[in-house]
Length: 214
Image (cartoon, rainbow, N blue to C red):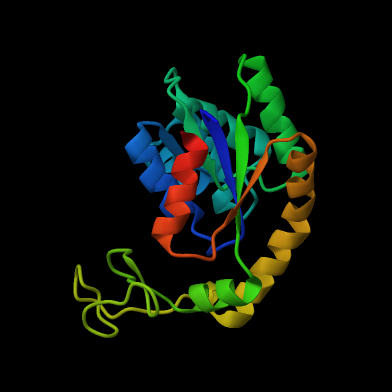
C-alpha cells in the first residue's frame, strides 16, 4: 500500500507525534501538526496567524475553516505528501477537510489509528516530566533524565504538568472518546481506517508503519 496523504489518529499519549516526526523525516514528506502550525503562524505574524491569535487571546477555539486554511498554507505547492497529526478530531472537521481536499484535486489515502488501552495511556502520560525552561519532555518509565528531576539539556528542575496528572488524563481520554469515536467509525465506513497496535515497543510499531507506507 503506497500512502501519500495520511492522518494519524489516536488518543493522547499513543505515540502519534513521535512516529509522525520520524516517518516524515525518513520519507521526505511533511509532518503537519496543527498545534505547531498555529504557534508558528502566530509567531511569524502571517495574516492567518494574526487571525488565529485573535481567537486564542480571547480564549476561543480557532475555527475549523481557519485551521484548514493554515494546513493548506503549510502544504504549499509541495506535493510529496504529508502526515496530518492532531486534526481532524470530529466528523464535521473531517467532512470540511475532505471537501477542501476535493476542491484541490486531492484525496486522503488513509487514516492510521494508534490503539492503546486506557490504563497504559494514563500510566504513560502521568509519568511525563517537562522542563519549564527549554521545553524538553522526559518520561519516568521510558525516557528518564540522566539525573532524577533535572533536565539533561539545561539543568532546570523538571515538573509534572497539571494536565498530565492521572485525573486530568482520564478526563482527556473521555473527551477524546466522545469526540473521536464517531470519526473512527466514519473513516472505517469509507475503507480508509488502518488500525495499529501501539501498545508495543517503538521499533515494532515503526516496522508496521514502514510496511503500511511501503
